Amino acid sequence: MFKRILPLLATGLLVWQYQIYRRNRQLQGQMAAAKAKPTEVTTWEGEGGALRGSGSQLGPAPVQS
Image (cartoon, rainbow, N blue to C red; front, side, top):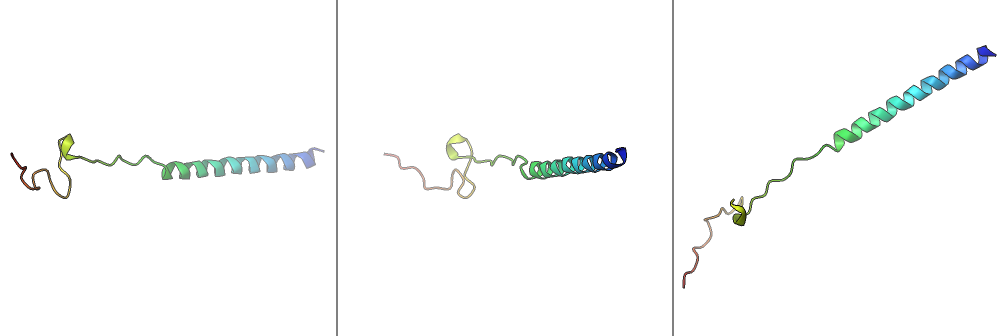
């Protein structure tokens, strides 16, 4: 009886370990793909910075009345 159960248990253990290995590899791939991207830096003239293309002082002079 043990001659039949032992190979079945060994096979089940190997399949179980393979499933754990495969699941871990999948999770590692998902974690690598979903790494946090750095936030995009945007500065506007009203917040103390200049726009990339124009700059803060490159427009026409303000009209004074």
